[in-house]
Length: 179
Ligand code: FES
Ligand code: FES
Image (cartoon, rainbow, N blue to C red; front, top):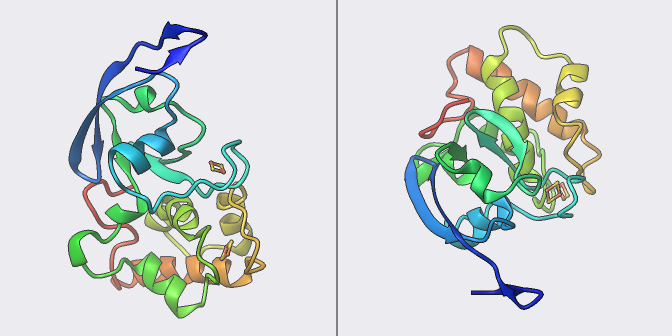
């Protein structure tokens, strides 16, 4: 057990449904959700870019809504459902339309920001009823920083994903917890 000023830090038992799998652990109350996902659940697709709620690389879905996993504690996710980028197309399943569109539109370069962008866009794409406008997409990903692409191809990919999804080209975000 680690200590805080010489006093032992108590641990809490939590159980989180991650990509349809129950993950149980004893965690310190100060453990961030992003570190729980990477260290306890072993899902390193969720990235840490800043730890200060600035970059969006850690974005996941919590009960279907996008959240920054460095902005909440793991204990706050106890009893809830988290979807990470690994949950979009698990176990060799076909890529989702969102992932296909990022590929087709060259929506990434180094890829560090990509898991967060995919999760930030998943709900927008799944909920889209008509053509997405550039400004709608840019608003949805305004909390996600990309140092490589200039965003143009990212926006094109998300708009393409919405068109693909509406035309039956595949789910925006498959996996156990559809947004
Ligand atoms: S690591 Fe969470 S916003 Fe940057
Ligand atoms: S593709 Fe490199 S940071 Fe976005």
